[in-house]
Structures are given as C-alpha cells and as structure tokens.
Amino acid sequence: MKKLIYTLFFVLISVVANGQAKYVFYFIGDGMGVNQVNGTEMYYAELQNGRIGVEPLLFTQFPVATMATTFSATNSVTDSAAAGTALSTGKKTYNNAISVGEDKKPMETIAEKAKKAGKKVGIATSVSVDHATPAAFYAHQPNRNMYYEIALDLPKANFDFYAGGGFLKPTKTHDKKDAPSIFPIFEEAGYTVARGYNDYKAKADKAQKMILIQEEGKNPGCLPYAIDQEEDDLTLAQITESAIDFLKKGKDKGFFLMVEGGKIDWATHGNDAATVFNEIKDMDAAVKVAYEFYKKHPKETLIVITADHETGGIVLGSGRYDLNLKALQYQKKSTDGLSKRISELRKSKNNKVTWEEMKEFLGQEMGFWKEVPISWKQERELRDEFEESFVKNKVVFAESMYSKSEPIAARAKEIINDIAMINWANGGHSAGYVPVFVIGAGSHLFGNKIDNTEIPQRIAKAAGYK
Image (cartoon, rainbow, N blue to C red; front, top):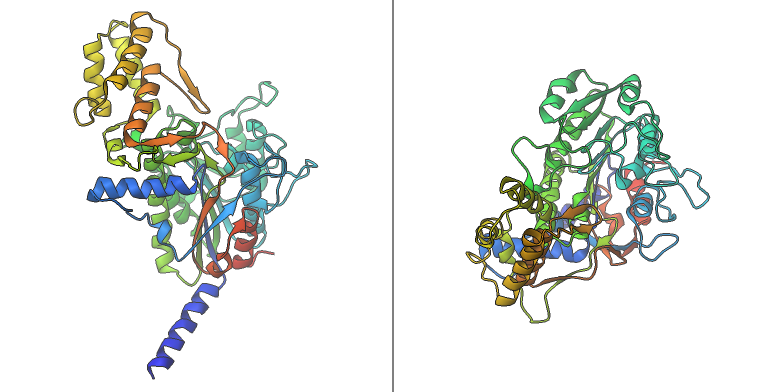
C-alpha cells in the first residue's frame, strides 16, 4: 500500500512538472555569473548569521539547476545585445545586434511567439526600456545603440506591458537628428504611460496597454541601485508585481513576462562587490513576487532564472585561503552614490576639505578606521588620492562602462574589495558559464548543461508556443 502511495505521489509530481506553462516568468540577471550568485549567498551568510557557508537565495533553491554557455556568433565573449538575442530568439548573432541575424534580417523572439499564441506579454527591466536586453525581446535593429529606433519598435511589437527606468533618446535618432518625441507615438498606439508606482496604480484599471517608468525628474536610464534606493524609488519587485497585476487583467489566457536585473551588470563593470550582491538580492526579491504567484498556480507556471553573460571575472578569495565578506556591510552606498556624496562635500566646502574631514567622511560611508581597520598602505593610497584631488586639484574621474567616479570613491571601493578579499579579472565581460535555475511546468526540460540559445527553445516547448 505504501509503495502504491509513493508511486502515485511521484506520478502526480511528474504530471505537475510536465504540464503546459500558461504563465511564464523569464528572469535575466545581466552580468550574473556563477560566482556572483555564490558570493551573494556567502555574503549574506556572514552578514545575517555570522557564519561561514551560504544563506540561500530563493531562486537557487529551485529544483532544477544547470549552467549555460554564452558565446555569440562572432566572438567567444558576447555582449548583451547578442546574448539577449540568443535568449530571446534561440539563435546566435553578432555582437551589438538586436534580434537580427548576421544578414541583418529580423528573427522572431519568444515574446513575439507568445503574443501570436494569444498570451499577454510583458517586458521589464531595472535599466532603460530601450537597453539591449529588453530591446532584444521586442525590437529588431542592427545596432544596440539605436535607442530611438528601438523605441519606435515598441508599439510595433504591440506587447501589453513595458517597464523600466525610461528611455535614453526619446527625441534623437541614432544619426543625432532631432525627431518627434516617442511618448505621443506611444499614446497614439494605445499605451498609457505611468510615471512611478503610485501613478501606475491610479491608471492601471482603465489602461489597455501600459508603459511604467520612473517619476518625472528621476534618471530615465535606470532605477537606482538597491543599496542607494530611497523610499519613493520604483523597485524591480514593484515592477514585477505591477506586471502580474496588469497581465492578469481581463480574459486570462496566460502571459509571458521577461524581467531583467540590469544593474547587476553595471555594478560588475564597476567591480563594486557590495553593490553587486545587493543587486542580486534585489532581483531575488522580484523573483519572490513571481514565486508567490507560482504557489497559487503551480501546475501552470514556469519560472526560469538565468543570465546573459558573466561580467568582471569576480574571484572570491585573494590567494590567502580566506574571505572577509562581512566587511562589505559597512559600504553604505554604491561607488556612484559615494562619488556623488564626495562631489557634494567638495561643493559644500568650496573644495577646501581637510584630510581629517575626509577621514571622518570615509569612516561614516565605508566604515574605515571605525568598524573596518585599514592598513598603513591602504591609508597611504587614500591620502595620495586626496592630495591629488583636493590639494593639487587634479581631479581625474575613474571610468567604467556605465559610470564616472570621484578618484577617492574609486580607491575606497578597491580597498573595501581588498579587505573583503575579493578580486576582479577585468571591467568587461567574460566567457564564463552562467547559472540556470528553473521551477514549475516544463522544468524537466532544463536538466542538463545547455547553450543559451536552448533556453528560449525549451521555454517555447514548455509553454506550447509554435
């Protein structure tokens, strides 16, 4: 009898896992390699429990876990456009391409397949809506930097919900010519534009199609880093919640929703470990919103978590058989946020900042000399940067892919990384494996090592898209 019960139980589990996915969540952590995920879990184990080990993220506990390769058609190291195209179309292309092949012809995306199958479709991100990864699901352009042209493809795709920071070039073409604002074009196509979470809630009931972006006056390029967020900032979890709410409106034939944690990549380009770990935790909070939905519809929901590529070549250890990740808790802001605070200090003091004032500032913002002891050599490096920047007034901003930082902010980040015993290989992408975590209907299709092009193919199979 007991054997029969076990047999029936496993048959039931198999049926649930093998059912068709009516609801699909596709999370992409931009730049999120295996070590970025592992480092986040180890950091929170030290931070929350004071122990060596891991404090599991929600998505790493999904029952199916594997890894994927990411090379593009033209290079072993992909960019986000080619990787986004692979993750959306199931086909390789050249770096910089947005869902076009090497012949520059459009390739159908899984989001477009979902729309044709009668599903509602949402595309969401923590960066701009016209950035490479989200664009690869709705646009078809030969170059990822064609932001205005990508935005014009948004209403052509006719998806139901878009969300992100905003749009980078709303009135300027790729060849730098003035052009009509994209916002009236969106409205003529039937889209309601909501600026902020409260505005979304006020407009959602009457809207047929929705574009949710940040409030007027906030950065249209991205949401703030999680470590820098203020109470009134739009979050990726709120965007995910709003997307589910909107896509479930009316007749429920199911939906496809892609959500990108885009600023993981930005922080890894800047080699900012504390900010990276906070960004991954922030994406996990968005995954939790999807997981709560999954628990209500377990037989019909598929959640896939992956990344487009690894960024930065993060190394958890400095050769001393040791890690000190808990030191990162004293970094109160991203390197960008710290840089802004230093610029404000410079302005408030008319550039007449003393070394003692700078030490007090860094003690408050980074924990240096207070919670985090630093060596004579590390203090010397900070003092040298101070002398150049504030005494000699030779301010050379440190640059990464997505930011420019006050030199002392950049040096402080390097020192906290050193204290935490984290190293970085570079400020760009690598060809490292990326993780894949899956739960729900069709998850059995993902059980082996795969290429990134196979992920949308398997999602399409799980969801029954032709």
